[in-house]
Image 1 (cartoon, rainbow, N blue to C red):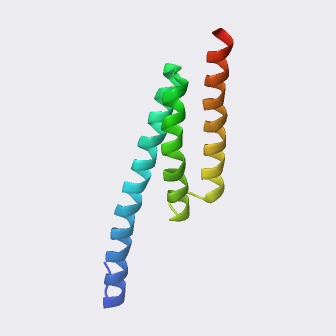
Image 2: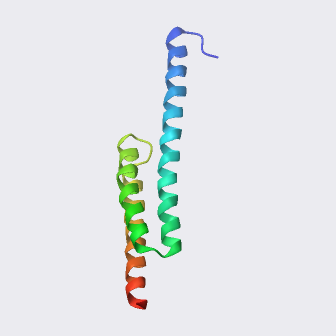
Image 3: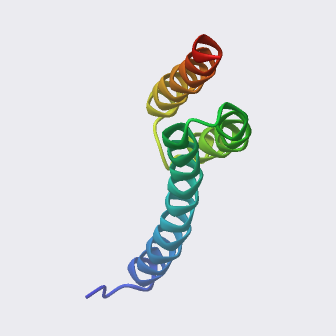
Length: 94
């Protein structure tokens, strides 16, 4: 247990920051899940819309330090390629 007043304050700050970061991480995961579901359904329009909503959310989390910048960029890049592939698969079968 913290003894000094500064250590007690640091503990409170850490707890508050952890709660905020957990909420941000959960929010990003929800957006990413929506993109995954749209890709799985094969609906290019829905996947594109979900991706456009998820991309700024992911970069916002990266800028806040929830995710590393390169991790966010990598995930966005891979998701973008998968969304694009859904579009080409839909046009190839049509």
